Image (cartoon, rainbow, N blue to C red; front, top):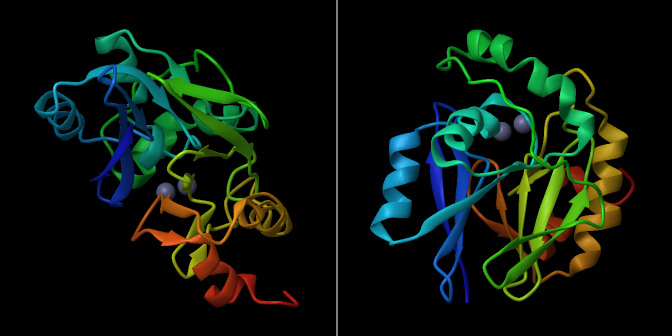
Length: 213
Ligand SMILES: [Zn+2]
Ligand SMILES: [Zn+2]
């Protein structure tokens, strides 16, 4: 079975997800933004082996611990989409601006694009390129549990900010309405911040997705 556990990290309470396959005990971290001891403790207490780091986008609260973890554990950094290269280049400035520990620089082992897949143990997730919050933002969808890891694209009752460099409100709405919601009302999702929700709940009640906007 595919498992997931949410670990809020950094001063921004960013939802890092520990995901794993219980047939192989192989694990991946989605958006390891910081708080490395907390992340490693969660892996160790379950007897898992860290195999990969998956990034939805390269904002510091999502990507800040990637370089260090990749070096100390010899694991690949997979994602985000190449559109976020400039955010990776800006990690030192992001660290300074938000008072984060200095992020160790990195280059993704593998970029992701729409239609790609990522695999942990016996489970494969689908990659959807969903720009707007950042140009290179990706969403990861696990079909068996019908769960999506959406980063800062969509939140319970809100959507991602688009006022950063490279942000685009129309792109964001198009990605949500054109790629995420069609997956189905029953899909549960882990957003980058705050509580889980379902696509159906957001389709009906999210004020940013109301008809006519
Ligand atoms: Zn972000
Ligand atoms: Zn965020």
